Image (cartoon, rainbow, N blue to C red; front, top):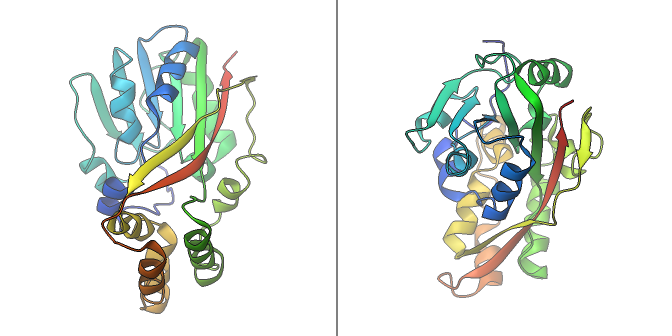
Amino acid sequence: MTNVPDHFSEQAAAYRDFRPTYPPALFDWLAGIAPDTALAWDCGCGNGQASIELARRFTRVVATDASRRQLALAPAAANLAYRCEAAEQSSLPAASASLIFIGQALHWFRHEAFYAEVRRVAAPAAGIAAVTYNMLTVTPELDALIGRLYHDTLATDWPAGREHVENSYRELPFPFRRLTAPPLQLTADWDLAQLLGYLESWSAVAAHRRRTGADPLTGYRAPLRDAWGDPLQRRRIVWPLTVLAGVIE
């Protein structure tokens, strides 16, 4: 396997437990842009959050990721196969995949090599979709605290490539006939512990601890608790969702 960056193995359990889930309407739409539902490739699948949803709509799903630790936490299904592989060099047969899905991962790939692999494995008129989400919104006071953590405390801890998430993939190459996705967003109704767990899952939080030996959340837990109120109260969390979608011709 080619050498690929791994920003999430260290906090794989937090990533599994405290990441928002994609809306079912996204997967319904993705099944509709594929020429058939024979095989979907979930590339950069992480802990299989999208893989299991694709498996409910496609006859077979192959889900690949470079992190064995993430894959070990992924849910199983009879028609779902997980493989530890680089995005740019998969074991899928040529012209086999009716849909290629990339969830919150395209910004980490070597794009020219990845798109060559996409064209190799794509069935005729296969669909492709890459999705990303960036900053959440809760309330103005909470948003300001989380924004300070993200932009100030962790400013030097985000890995290269994260800037593409921040600009909603506008500068990423996507050499396919574009499709317009329906307007979608991620939502969750969380208590304070779930919000803090989500912040723990950020790759920059783990990087900050490695770099400094200090917990970057130390100065934020009390202010976040004060801004939240009753820690058991559930608040609506929203992440805007960007979908780059197209047909491989």
